Length: 427
Ligand code: LLP
Image (cartoon, rainbow, N blue to C red; front, side, top):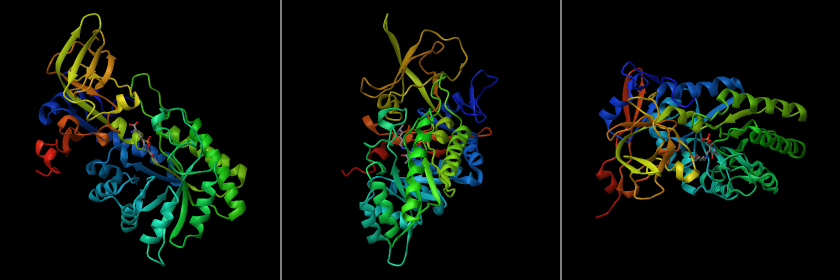
């Protein structure tokens, strides 16, 4: 699935998402513009929730895209939420997210973070020993905060180095291999402000090959067997993280959410049966797989530069400020001409951004029909980790966001203005 579920070519021969013509949206709201298809968001949420059923809980990982207007749709689908900072929690509270469904993660929580999680009534996912002290200073005597512990299972999934997190050499979590995880469980069980409800792990992101998740499950279940044997402790909840990859190009074939959930449930069931363990609730926290396929980015073509025998650069009005992924992770994207998505491709072009850096290239050598200045280009699979990682580099205001559904578009984030650039500056 490269394009949103409601995508079609309309009678005018143009791209349409959520019943809205993308060329028209670009005209109405300006570009760069991020367009989210509500139906796709809901379908992706439902696929996870239905596949997991009563066996567990799905949290959406807000870091993928955390605009309150987007979070409201996810909340309405019944998902919980994973936040990693007071700021993300603030966005969730602004969205009216049910706080009993919020989990607060993060490897270096401040006292303020822990206090915010406690005040909100969120579940805290403890990532390091210093949090035990923070909990003493935040949680009043006689009270307990629902907590989970983040384990590091020592697994390196098949993905880009920068987004692999489960390996021994990682800043995240208590390593099972080193004995830190065992020590953390013992401390948590003895801690009078902690109600230890679960154990959690997350091995990485944009993962297609689920063997890493299955191997991590085995390691975690071995760890659980040791806890039961030695401490008589069995967690109610077992978090297996997110990480399911999505298609960015026509060739990408990621597992579906249902395949992801089924593979993990099967591994869990077989693993606990072999070890005679109690069945925990399985907690999953996809970010990219929910938001990614739902969003497309629209840009307007400006300068076109030919270097004979070398390449044609097609420059657009956004770039690394709204999508750092190509240069940070070597991510590849497809591009479509919004007025003629199925037109016959001319020789491949390179889509450059407008930031003052040579590295500001969104897609290299992509096939497109002949493109002219003023044309609107659509980059699919732009819903996750683009705007949430956006910056004001080069003094560029960040793009607007619309949510489309059944022919209606609603603005959920306005385009930033130059005054927004000055909002925090002191003159
Ligand atoms: N849970 C934890 C603890 C995580 O650290 C993450 C992502 C997720 C869940 C959600 O993972 P997802 O389902 O989205 O793969 N900026 C990078 C991705 C960084 C992911 C960080 N952690 C990118 O653009 O590819």
